[in-house]
Image (cartoon, rainbow, N blue to C red; front, top):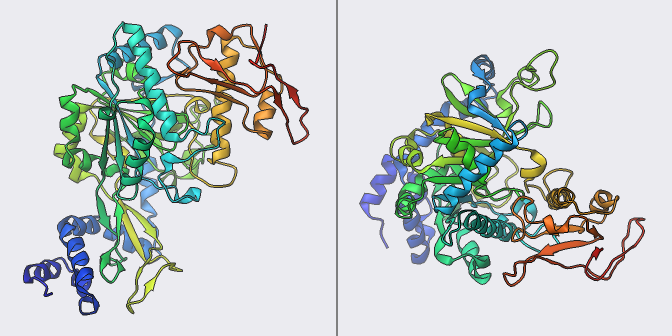
Length: 528
């Protein structure tokens, strides 16, 4: 099997001829695999991407630092103007109700969809499947995907009830990667799409880019196979265009898109209050934010830079800027809008970005220890030093193209608890489960139910204490029937067989450890 001269010329022009270095050692099947990989690469795009970051990469590689960059950013960054921002803590009850009604109306008219960024695997969690399939060990054993699906179902129900319709549909677009696409689709099929209509769940795959060495040469995973990596969550915009997703949105008369990351167990999909706020502000692009826990928290902040809005990474800001206060008498930080990958876009805005600006989005460098064939032709599965880079775009890099930007601040304890680590004190399955259960405890308390005084301690020590199905309550509503009731632990409130009344499922006896006294439980969990 000979190499087509056009292929060889293409590689020569792209300065990637080294990809054929082991051709003579390959059998016909391996040669076909290599040629297929080569033919799939847009070499012009790869070289343009490398050229755009080459100076930054070589400066860092040579031990130099970008001393001018933080100072320049610090000099020109400003907080979001007050008239473009809102806060769930500062809005009146009447304002929140107005936002909620506007959002529910848009949902009732099927004008709102949700778009899930689900390209990540659970590698950092110690599993080899998509992160959305992860179970944080709730009593119900529900995965992140199932929790999100059930929130969609409940919100559709709320919109139908509010506006006396039966047709509210929230289409769920799910951006996968080559590593998660097949498993994710199979998982949804095997669970009957968690009660959602299959035609309203649309999977589409983001593109990949080859991994490069520090000189811009494509790395070989095997002698017959190129290394490839997803192009970051900002690869969304290319995929929206090339996979026909924007056309599908327009066909379905969708006007507004809620984009979010898969790992936040508290995410409120198509949150009607957020949607309503964005509509009130006539925003074409908006972001939910939370206040930073400490000035130097490792989270990007949304701010104004020049005449545009963008996320400035925590590593780009000088410490003195991170600590700046609004006034001498205030503990409020100037730059306090922590980015949580939770965004609103109009379809018209996305159309404009994809048609006119997608190629303008800059690539970010992720230096990695990448399994690859080394210079001696040996496969190194665990490199001891950084040997390459992956190029990524970020979903928030479109903010500068917004003409009417807005920011909505929410409470971290109600809306943000990400799953990122397998162990430690932060962002683990344990903290996610705890945060969700503590939220459910607050909902029950707000409904007027009487709970054991040590319930929060119980959650911290025993764990599986209190869970309310998203099918019963989206954001604390629909629990009024529990007012005045005395509940004992553990509490599990679910909706079964589409019955109107939620079921409370509790065992007769609970044995606790960690020095906590056993609690006697009534069969139905309610004392009158």
